[in-house]
Amino acid sequence: MSVFRSKFPKTMLVISVILMLLIGASLAHDQYAAQKDGSNFYFAHIGRVFEKYLPTLFEKFVNLVGMERINGPLEPLMTFPLTFVFIGLFALTVLAGLLSMIIRKQSNFDTLPSSSKVPSVTKTAPSYKDRALNRRH
Image (cartoon, rainbow, N blue to C red; front, side, top):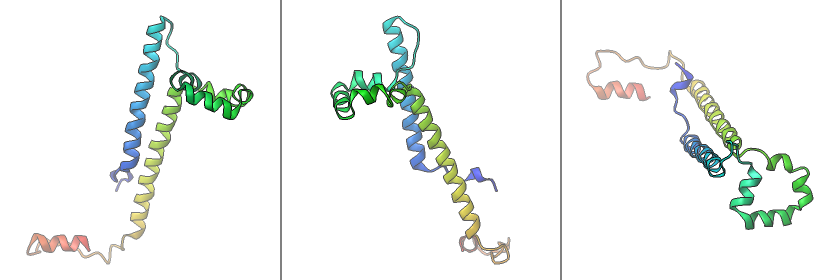
């Protein structure tokens, strides 16, 4: 029996779909910004998106953290492309879902009774109900 026959967790599936939509939106934004400016395509940085679309929140963040920290240790984080962040989160979500599938499948193998204890289903069972009862228990 294959490990991939078990279902992908629904929570991870929903998060993956949301992240795929965010990746698409981020790429569409970057393409729109490149066409609007007449420049080459570039990936928008987290800090630039944060500063441009949430200016009051960005100012509160700067006041809380301080400009010397933003220009110092936080600079690599603020200059990281937003699309890559979403792709990384998507990859982690898919990996967590696959690990969850494997762990769930392994725990099912551990709890199954041995084959000698499972009643066999014969073709001489009088009804469908009798055959189903043998499979469920």
